[in-house]
Image (cartoon, rainbow, N blue to C red; front, side, top):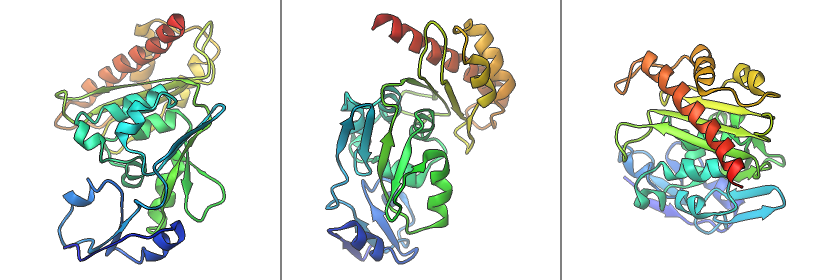
Length: 268
């Protein structure tokens, strides 16, 4: 049962207030409202910390931890993959509540945003750290420091071509498979490619062998990409599909995402 909501005015006050499992940072509250009613008992609201802004500086895009998924969807300066990943939360009501910081702090197994951020080489700003942390390392850092407060993310390659594709049972279901791709260049040859897959059961992996095979060459036929993904990705089976089904669909949606980058380049 929630007994108190604190509303600190500074980041330092917020971090000091996080004293143990009985306290929790409050952003949009979607996760906290779905937890057991006895834990936590004290919430630390982040509403007064000025973390709800989106800024751009040249090729760099910064999003505060309190930026909602809907704000990310509506931000023209945000990379395509980020906007597409945020839009996969089908309910606009939830998109108006869920925050960038909450997605990183929770790191849910079916998050579409986490694979997108990895594909975009995002860096996470954390309270008390002078330098940002690579998104791939952020989960471990936050888990080792329960009081860690996510302040926002930095996307230094905001102009990179990027795309997200997902498989779900219905239009309003959470994803059961996510593919996120990014590239510094897509034509005439691919360069600085990122291919990230999530089986939405805890495995989020960069397929570095596939990236190496794609870099420096024109985009291969879809069937070839599907074969590359099938050989490199080993998803976990669940109620949404067998491992073989997920492996097959991973190849399909990854190939579709990469070709979407090429089509976007041709249209620009």
